[in-house]
Amino acid sequence: MTRRPFLARSAQASLAVLEAPASSGALAAAARRHAAPADAGTEPSTGTAASGSRATPLRLFLAGDVMTGRGLDQALPHSVDPTLREPWVQDARRYLQLAEAANGPIDPPLAFDQVWGDTVPELQRAAPDARIVNLETSVTTSDAFWPDKGIHYRMHPGNVRLLQAAGLDLCVLANNHVMDFGREGLRETLAALHDADLLTVGAGLDHESATAPAVLTTGKGRLLTFAYGSPDAGVPLAWRAGPRTPGIAVLADPCADGAEEIAAHVHAFRTDGDRVIVSLHWGSNWGYDVPASHRACAHRLIDAGAADVVFGHSSHHPRGFEVYRDRLIVYGAGDYLNDYEGIGGHEAYRPELTLMYLPHLAPDGALVSLEMVPMRVRRLRLERARGDDARWLAEALDLASRPYGAGARLTGDERLMATW
Image (cartoon, rainbow, N blue to C red):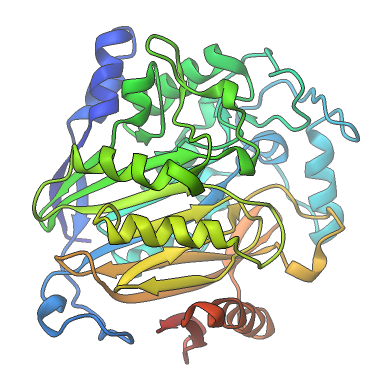
């Protein structure tokens, strides 16, 4: 596949180089060359983006929570100690057993590209300019379990090649699992990701680096991503990065003064022509209701010119989306990859069904089109969801988005297209 190189730069990675010189990969992450595909043309908008905005859309791949610890880690070539401190499960291999009981044998170790399954050809087809996921897993061998926390996720640093296998550009880290093994676990996580030439955002060695944007410079202009976690998604306030203390970007309340705080910070970095994603790990795990305060926060960010995409996640299944003033708001992207197979209790939400979000943004940040690819986690692998599964997901997302003036229709090739 012909690719057009572009520079990827992260202010956070640059700070990491200064403060942790032993992590040589941080420098590579701060100024690396990544391949972007040749322009394959654009799709017509199904919404109301301005007519000249389709010339050079920026194509993105966004995915919600990627949870590669516990059972997934045990199925990969390298694994941490399987010991857990959960109320009901004390051995991570139990999650591997549950997945096998639900859908058949897994036969570890899985190859890294096996786990992504049909994601890889879908990305080749969609040819995104940037690939961004919320990595909701620490990458560490630390045994320093964060106290008073029921669930802990960690992946062996040797498995970081799993993230490289999908060609990811950026891992969002402002969430409620990246510090499950404390500040030293976070240091190791940052070092492992930067050594693997992966950019990060939302976490750092101090407050300045944790709140700095990740900057991807493409032939279509700069893309800035800011990331914050919220206590209403289980992010401990104690995880907030300090002036000289590793941690993550935590907003005490993103729904009160948080939008103004974010907007002021964005405008300290944004320049003319930039497109901006604000990633928010917020809200409950289950249910389709979106708090009115979340919607107000997203609208304020857009009204203030601080976000072209509000990328929300934390819910274990996709929630509704909205297009407000031609800007995309994803209220809950849903998990993209996890080890929940065989765990009962929330079958009504079909949490095994996931979505690839593939928005196209005009040069001014307006949404040109949004395609979503229905996927399914089965035997710890991602495969295309088709037939009744694809129809169910399209209907559920359409119904959940109607209150916000948006919808989803199933196309002839069993993908979803947004309407608004």
